[in-house]
Image (cartoon, rainbow, N blue to C red):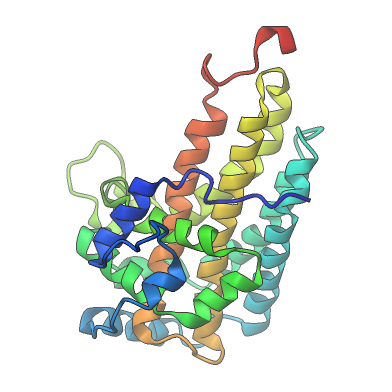
Length: 300
């Protein structure tokens, strides 16, 4: 069974941009990887990242259920492993099919985090996306060996892991449009009190897009190409990867605490950032089927 790569669209230019964000030299062979970056980056103490991670730990102490988090983290890992089989199955038969099943453990995780006030805590303790915050996030991720190993264990190869880093590092302008609910300026044309926290919007949005794939692909089957199915699987795996990063960091809050406070801050930031970028790419690559993208009429 062919592996679905989240790195399919990662260009050499994007890899160079990732290296530039981290201030490291391009490798002689032109291949930028998570492991290669980890060998070039020196640890850098960041008191703001440490204090934010410490504040999140204190704020959520006793509010999260370890067994529930660990169970759904394992279920998300299993869902990631099923993505290639879902892709091989082609267009879903109906509106409640394989993509809905892939999203199910993510929804259960989401419900628990919502009940615990997790998303509000992140909005209070994490800043909005800025170039500086993103740079430090990527730097801390690269040095977070427990997180890298966890992604290895659920089927992300080196190129796919590096693509997740690229999603975070190279999209500062796109991410900056996602503002924490407590940072929305006064005078906007809607009630800011009804806007969910940023990280809730990121996770819930990703899950809604995944769940919507069954209906969309079956409804527009005559227009769907292999390339569209590839993109659907690719960005689904990326979004599940973002969920897995968030779940891993949440488990660290109530478990062995293998992540430093800096790495915890980076993991929660990155989990949401990956979900945001991947859902926007899915929207444009799969849901908005243009004349140039759709299957030729003679094949329909």
